[in-house]
Length: 260
Image 1 (cartoon, one colour):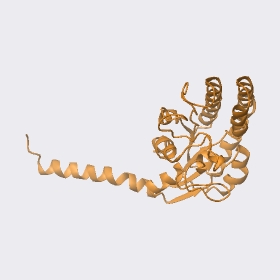
Image 2 (spheres, rainbow, N blue to C red):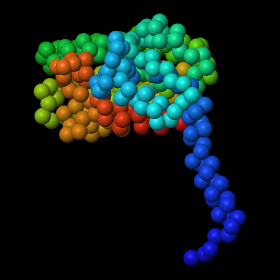
Image 3 (tube, rainbow, N blue to C red):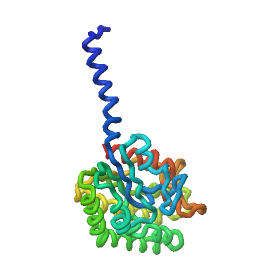
Image 4 (cartoon, rainbow, N blue to C red):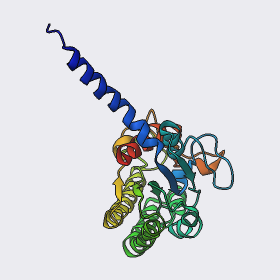
């Protein structure tokens, strides 16, 4: 084995020191804000509180705890639509924000009512309700997303904005589930249509689109280690939302990979 020279050791030590120090320095200068709906506020995770049902186990607070940004605004709120984000969250967004994350659009297309319909009606009724949501995504959601993204850009023009997708709820098909495979397929098809529209408009705005399906693959509802809650009764709002692992191993890595 060859012996390293003192100069080589010094250079190696300096490079390693710089490599270890850079992330902390970069993180400490970032002003980060988490916007959006229940998938960002942490509904489905433990420790929810307040009218917005925010949880420190959501991916935004987890990223902030891990990276120690200069500031962190947790503005996401359960039930938020694109209109709610524009009217109630963006006005509070710091103009100096460097990094923004957002999940939004699911409530616009009727996420809750669609899932409720699929649980309480026939296969054909579920498919029809999902098709309504898909039609809304095609005809109306794009304009609402454009307005929301433009408002973020106007309020915090220097921010890097990461728009995260929604995961697929079921594997294809999931076994051992109460819902029929036809309903599972319809729900997943609706999620794909929604995510496609979100990706289209996010990229048109010059934002970063972060797909979370890879992180959730194999961990859908009815899997042995689900990252998404199935139907829950207490509280019912947790139904079909990411649990602690969904944020820690699903959304957090997806966001981290896109935020750098």
